[in-house]
Image (cartoon, rainbow, N blue to C red):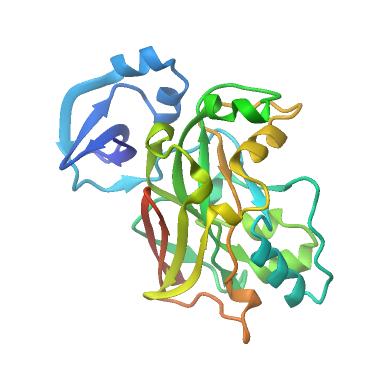
Length: 280
């Protein structure tokens, strides 16, 4: 089972369930509305109407607020970042949270229009994203599974020059079309343990990142516990869990995205998120 958002014949986005060669239509306005229902209510909203799986997909979910992100959450990525910046590596005691604005969210299998006049250092970051399934707060680490709806792929595209210039991460992470998500959400029950999944990033077919989520400094359970501490999480919230080593700015020499580049984020058991770069 794969949860998707697709465009119907009239160009309207509709939520659905991908099963083989067909998509069962969900009778809710958005997938976020569906996620907010109880498990029993969700079953009643999956209709008997089907459309072809060949339809154009949108981002599977568009959260009501910013995407919550974790920075430097893989040891080797933290190490390469410190080395590139000429700093000493320090392992934090808590996750480093930042956010990407909702205008950054983009659909799978689309061209991302990145403005050259804004940045000349667009970079890629392959990430496992967690989709929250219920309103929650102060989630205990041992109870994290109770609040997860599912998992998807995310590419945290970053304007590195803006990130440096502003001294914080929000602006350089929130440009339009810099957060493709998808192509679908895999239900949490079909993953089981998200703590040992292979994750790769390919640029024009060449592998640039390859690691396993077992090497995250803070696992999904700890991320959810810390993010929800004193702060309510809502159904449909998306949490990006960090990226492995191999990003462009830390390479020698640095490698940034160029017009026509083909990007692919692959996560074991979930699927592949593909996008093309268009520098405009």
